[in-house]
Length: 96
Image (tube, rainbow, N blue to C red):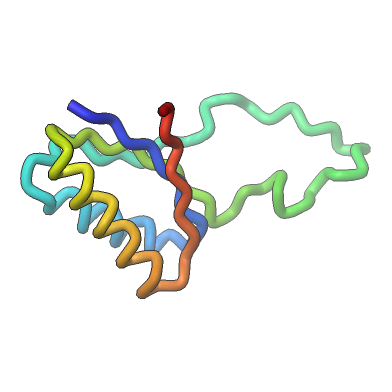
């Protein structure tokens, strides 16, 4: 079983669409949007307080379990096609 982690920079509608598309791929048994589990300890007086990078709006992280290399390639194909079609950014977090 392969675990893919990826990030999408786009709106909530595209994130929901991605979950639906990936869930429909044969063999993919787990698609989950994961959140930032660490609380942010931003200092209100910091020079970077409130900047877009601090709020991370439109940033979505996903975990996808694929049973084999063929399913992994299908996941990547679907993700990349959606990114092109909807004009969003995708980044893979490959441990290799």
